[in-house]
Length: 138
Image (cartoon, rainbow, N blue to C red):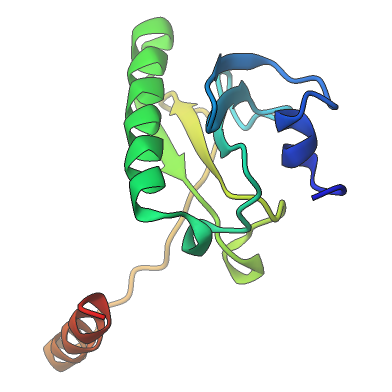
């Protein structure tokens, strides 16, 4: 994609701070970090979101995410780590190219990732399990 910032980074047209690179993926520092050591794992080929990631590619991707998390833990010794991927505008995706954020966290760092605390009734869970199991098997 000619106008995709991550495609340009993967092609070497935009400079980046590369931690790791192979034929399929790049691990780079986020240009606008939420915290020190905020890292991105990006798929080099253009894939809009997680729905376009192939099963075998996803397996290799998450092996790299795990290795990156280990490197962050060893090097920075954070108190915690957020692993986040926003998929679709409604989920906060701002760049239409699949990537995963690894954000090292420190107690009291001011970075927030918040989810509402809902309390659905048991039948809602039972129904949702049924719906998702049916879709999972397709």
